[in-house]
Amino acid sequence: EAGVAQSPRYKIIEKRQSVAFWCNPISGHATLYWYQQILGQGPKLLIQFQNNGVVDDSQLPKDRFSAERLKGVDSTLKIQPAKLEDSAVYLCASSLGTSNQPQHFGDGTRLSIL
Amino acid sequence: GENVEQHPSTLSVQEGDSAVIKCTYSDSASNYFPWYKQELGKRPQLIIDIRSNVGEKKDQRIAVTLNKTAKHFSLHITETQPEDSAVYFCAASMGGTSYGKLTFGQGTILTVHP
Image (cartoon, rainbow over all chains, first blue to last red; front, side, top):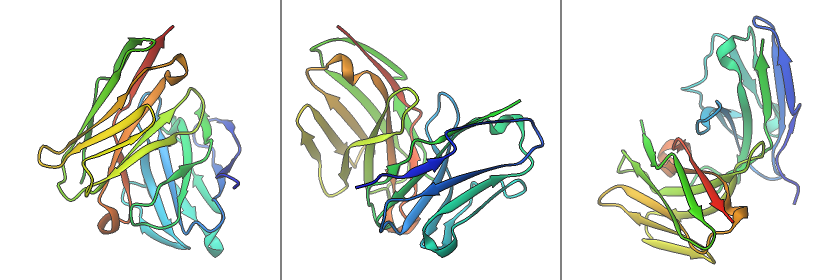
């Protein structure tokens, strides 16, 4: 079974620039999550999709972050404009459903803001 | 919202010894508790999980115990090996009521010395 795919693996940008990350979940997984993992901390949920609808975006900084999951499969996460504190690893995860189903993570995108 | 505290932040053991990592959670509605292992620069990998209707679960050298009354759960690794060295994260979820949202602990850096 193919795992969660993410790209790019690494991205370096200057502050105030924009950046986008892409995620392809495990086939058949209805639920998709984007997490932010700052160095030395546990992942923090940014946004969660059930199929193509948002079920939780309470911790997403909506003034600069946006995400979409068109057609309920792939998803993109965008940051515009980026701030220095956005430097982190952005992890995508997917699960079959929302009721205590195991979440499987991708390798993440390491974002560095200069 | 849910809050998960994890201890210790670092743990150093000799090969063959046991390692124990403890987590406490704040919301008694939490009912799903996974543990993830994350090697440097890699994705978090699910190693074991437990649901609130079970007090203990074991998988070879790894076991997890749950005390719902005290709201804490622990990861036990026996006969540790150098390849067990990694960062371990606990997490908690309220399942359907929170759409499966995971709240992670801060992580424990486990080092197993040969």
